Length: 471
Ligand code: FCB
Image (cartoon, rainbow, N blue to C red):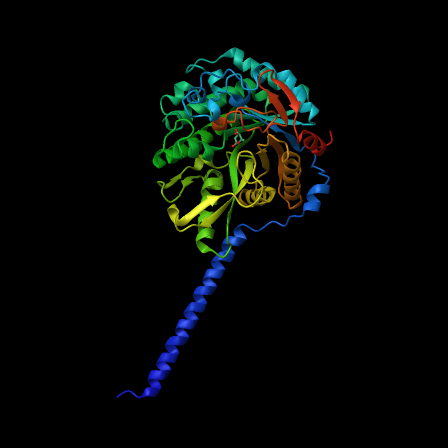
């Protein structure tokens, strides 16, 4: 017969063990949340500092605006976007790119606008479908046009940063699978080689691909951009295609243009958990950050093509040829997204704007996010960084002056923190064809009158000029 005393002590021991286990679990919980938090340290921000600051950019700092061929040139008829935009319901208000900002015919005027802004750099893209309207047939006049544009920029002491692929693909390539076509990487490398041969003498800064994750997401997950697919396996195939294409193009650029400084421009969202003590929010924030923001650059750093998101096939393949293919990382920054526990939503989370002011494009204005991303990019890759795009859709002009100033402050603060930031490009020089948003989203430092093509300084232009590095 067991005596009551040992029974009591057994119960007491069990209770003690339960307490210790609960304590350990709580510690593990807090520890894991803190670990996630440390990966994304918060930013201290003072409104006075951002108002009064005087930039003092480092010598040689690139300060300019960014555009993309299809959005500004006009008359691009041989690419997948020109076909897609004519489809019913594809672009807001039924807009088509058409004459766009007629930049193709106004290069001299637009270079003068850059000078008036105090810019010393300009990021723009080559329109592959103009240069190679039919497979294998180079258009010499189009190449000469870009060579002349580069000459005009150089004469104005404006450093070009040239993007090879900013969303638009020649129809001949789109029609056989575009980013997922087996020969896309080889074709893109052939185009990069031709660009290096023809223009390399005038270009140092090359940007292979603009926003791979955005092309993947809108084109293959949401299906709201060409090729309008909704197929996660194809999305990963497109991502993989862009990694291979980048590797081959970078190799071609390096062989032909020995001074090339090669990078790319990746869209980054400042994802944050809505509550720092919610482990689910923390974990999802970490997964979306790693995959949406960094997967392309991580793949290059590790020499492995990688993508791993729940709901998508996992990509994890050795690719040593990716290593060393970039000399700098480009960050396009526009917004913050909060990750929130939402029991009714798919995956039990919703991802959306935080409480800050919204731009006309409906995204939260949050300059602190730029600072955290710049720090994170520098910490992850130990490479120079360029803000390859940053701007705001703001037709009333009430946000842009402060937007320009606070984001420039974030950039300046990143430099003070030790980030090797080499340049900052405002999106955009003038209002232009904003993809599925058409012409209603106005991002320009110059307002565009599409009837007359007149450009007039918009809100923010003066602030941009004031912050320009002294010549
Ligand atoms: C970026 C794109 C650019 C422009 C801006 C507003 O994601 O790279 O072409 O559309 O957004």
